[in-house]
Length: 258
Image (cartoon, rainbow, N blue to C red; front, side, top):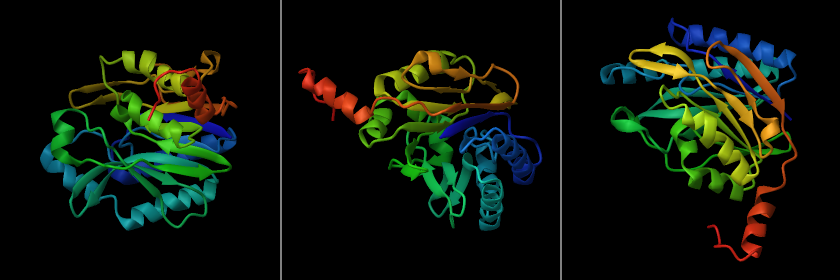
């Protein structure tokens, strides 16, 4: 199983322009032998909008757009996780869409830990984890701020996840998150974290890149530079089972992790 992360900024021109960039990324990932590729948070739509623009922006993510994205997945043979706005009857959600070849529709993860007043104003929070099996590998999905909560990554590990896929839109000056928190989540849970961050500027935000794939062995950490778009990839390492590791902690008489 080879995992890829695509670091980039959402191109101008709406979802059509973003879809073209996604197609280019999938072609590069296919050539590299990537099985599953992770794009940044809200890559399809852009992350930040004034509150009045959020719903119209989300409305561009139509069933036809989803069908076109699924066709890209089918044609390339590369599964991918794509951050986006998503319109619902209750409002707009910040989601990760999981496209797999020959699937009728994507799986959907809804961001649970909304960050700051703006996100809490414009998005409806999710309430459930997402785990799925693909090519004999169990994956979990989180979005950006979610991964900063150890409970949510531990939940994935206890459910047997071998890798956590994280679309992200992390801004300056929060360099400590990719430098410290993301590797720590991989090490403490004995799993791989694939963290896809944005670059560039959007309104008053500057995104810091540092997309990465890391597992429980720090020598296996692959990090993209702070600027510049493109692919990083790595083969999923055979980390010791997280469930075995957590059971071993309990066998040593340490507090039971629930």
